[in-house]
Amino acid sequence: MTYFRVFRGQRVLSVSRQFMRYALVGVLSNSAGYCAYLLITWWGVAPKTTMSVLYLLAASLGFLGNRLWAFSHRGNPLASAVRYACAHLMGYAINLSLLMIFVDRLGYPHQLVQAAAIPVVAVFLFACFRYFVFPPDERKMNKAS
Image 1 (cartoon, one colour):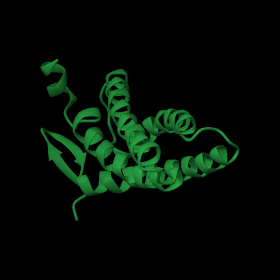
Image 2 (cartoon, rainbow, N blue to C red):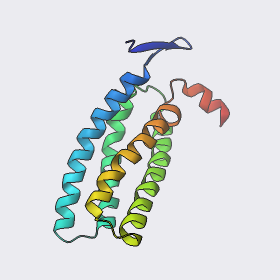
Image 3 (cartoon, helix red, strand yellow):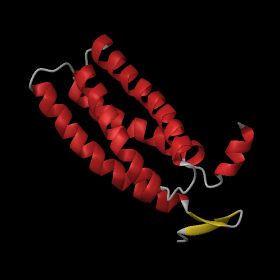
Image 4 (tube, rainbow, N blue to C red):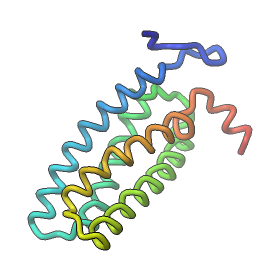
């Protein structure tokens, strides 16, 4: 298996290598976040409020792990941070929608819905990070702006 490929003269991590690294960052941050979610909701804080606060915290911490290690991105950090925030806003909307539909409307337990939402949002975010947030050739994106 090739871990690097050449993209316009740059060595770029292969998709499988990026996904493994992304998954490790995600498993660590989401495991801690989900345990915190269960504890905080057990204390009586509303599930959507808890998810909102923890989502912001985990996304902020995940930026460094994903930018520097999972995707080895060396482009403009401010531009990638703005794109990262946009991707996470969409991920947040997906997560919130799943809670509103499956918990509020259909009556499923919030613990199970949130556990199922994590991989759904994770796959969506990987695609966003790979092709939009941390692209291998950021110059191409800057010319399109």
